[in-house]
Image (cartoon, rainbow, N blue to C red; front, side, top):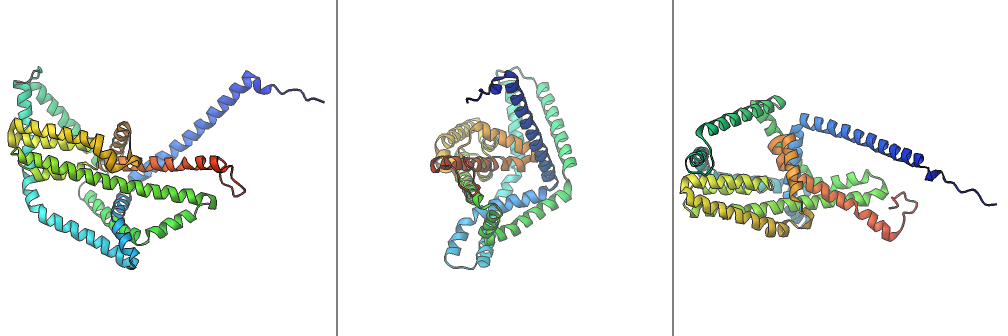
Length: 375
């Protein structure tokens, strides 16, 4: 005997109730996630020294990973490899600083007054020769307002964190802890990784291992790419400043190199500094040349070099870069602006690696009795 057809699912009221129930469930889920994220953010701001140590350890151990693997593959004991690579890096860095510090320090002493003179020249041009209707009083009001805002910002930052000597001490402690952590990562990093993966259920271990490996590759690509672009940009822009007769070429090149690790914003800051320095030390014509060269170099890097150097795994939309830098800078200052892009790149690639699993399962069929997801 035929059963009557169930038409309850066609009831508009039932469908509306199901939609509302689903929206409510997702809303509570989002609220829970938001509370957890706020708690984590609050905890991170209180333990910023540990965050600094972790960042130093992760970036430094990733940069020193190739020589560590090379020596370990040739049978050198783990502890000796870790100590030798880390001490070797510190020795090389100390030697470079010792060789360049005297000349750079002498030139950096003039960098602040040079930029200040450049700003004064720019103000004179705006008032006297520019096509804009700008008065000296307008500029003075703008300066006073900017000084007030910067003062308020510094005051709020000093009240939020720890100011003065304590802040310097905590930063030093964080760097020292980061170096110690780097030693243990270089010595036993793979063992830590295996132990961490083993904490997951058996059917999740392969995915967890691949996610970790992709995050490690992404971070390495970011460091190599940023350093490569920084060297290229620093040499070209620093040489241009020197060729047009400007001074402080070495500090400009050094600033340009480190600015390359903060995409988008770093290039703008380094370019403005190079132009202002050249404006005072070499005149308006030299500053124009430096500006043109900086613009061309940045476009060349963005359109040609960056995709080749970074590869597809680090192709981030400029809007993503801008949001990452802004969010990191707002939450953690300069330190957060530096971490914004690499952290975003790592997270995006981890999510991309997670999406590989459903595609494989779609080909291999549903999971068996081992509990793996069925797609």
